[in-house]
Amino acid sequence: MIYVRPIAMTVSLRAGNALALAGGWTQFSQVELLERGRAPRLGDLDDLTAHQRHALSAPRPDFAGLAMTQPRIMGILNVTPDSFSDGGQYAAADAALAAGLAMAAVADIVDIGGESTRPGAGDVASDEEILRTRPVIAGLRAARVATAISIDTRKADVADAALGAGATIVNDVAALGFDPDMANTVARHAAPVILMHAQGSPKTMQNAPNYTNVVLDVYDFLAQRIELAMAAGIPRDRIAIDPGIGFGKTPAHNLALIRHLSLFHGLGCPILMGASRKRFIDAIAGPNDPQARLPGSLAVALSSVAQGVQILRVHDVIETRQALALWNAVHSGDIP
Image (tube, rainbow, N blue to C red; front, side, top):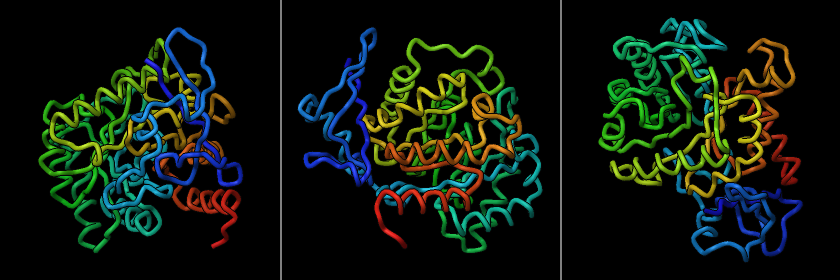
């Protein structure tokens, strides 16, 4: 099998015969052709099949009512006592609701999670996860917040409760693989879903990550999960994918995925990048403090946007919004 990574170009570098990458703000006229057991080689548009050209260039449908023609920011709201970066900060319902209201004013999506998936974390019972998340979602909707809300969960009953309370997206770090009822629950609600790659469970995933080729292995996994979701009644236009930075990956694995992000446009779905405050930033630049990882998080976010990634999942919403505005002004010449 030949995998195709489009080489993204910004406005100032666009070639006359270039195609829009996923119908977005970057274009490509050259590609990197990848095969297992063979050195990568450079190709151009003539090397692509009609199917490949379409998959890489076709505009992505709106996702949860959001146009994918510009980068979107998903703000992280962890209502847990033990998340790696902000555990306990929003564990109380009133604090979580206040944080959610502030985030919804700036972010395109508020992502609410009631179970930590940091390395080494154990499972949380569904009823406890529902108790943590549903009141916050209901409170945001009661306050007339119209911003998209995603529920970050692996469990069907948690997703069902959240969607019933007003959530609009299911963000499943297990890509429908943890709970056998999850796919049917998502399909029944006609909800958009984010399928993320992870190797192993949160408790064990960082013990010894191993891949034959991390980029192609993750690509194949996500392709298979998309097919499973579609077979369960979830159409492709309600699916986004996430390569799962930090979930069963070494720093070298994470960097390889970030360098090759544009490859994943070939799956025909919006791409989410979630590298915010992740531990691999320390391995490269330090210090060992999640609160000090904003510069590294922004560097990865902007590198992702330069490859046409549509959704950035971040802790620091205001700072990311400012970075995106400057990136866009530099590359497009447009000043708001």
